[in-house]
Image 1 (cartoon, rainbow, N blue to C red):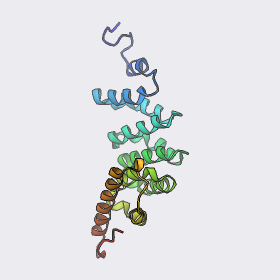
Image 2 (image 1 turned 60 degrees about the vertical axis):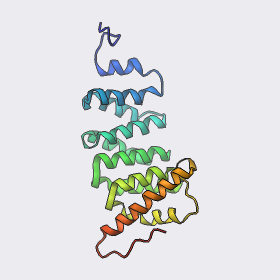
Image 3 (image 1 turned 135 degrees about the horizontal axis):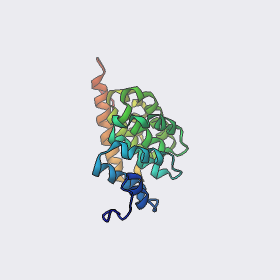
Length: 193
């Protein structure tokens, strides 16, 4: 018996199952395993399992970690693509962000579609959506009308509808609009409102 781990089997699945009886602990446990070992072969089965979880925050947390891992987590692409139609907008937003971080340019159309649908259906996702669009750079150009629409509102939904989050949303949106306009050859001066 391994006294440090408190069980006979030192495999990651045994370590993981030993500490994940609590619903809120599972995503954090996988993140800790990744941070401690950096062994993709150990964490991928656990992350893929979390993508099938009925609890939405666990799916979102798994997608976030897959996005942090980036292209080496490409085995998750089909699952993330399938989750872009999930009934919960937040799941779609987190999975779209991960899809972008892992698949990059090839996933841009699906990512844009999912992000724009989510923000249209749930304005509270705006901060996450705009942050994802910002990471996409010039490939986010089709989102310009939505960005302008958001900025034209007296107050945006955004996360928790707080002033701080609204100001951050405006700041990122203005910067992104300016970058998208400067990236287009011969583009007129950016219109941010």
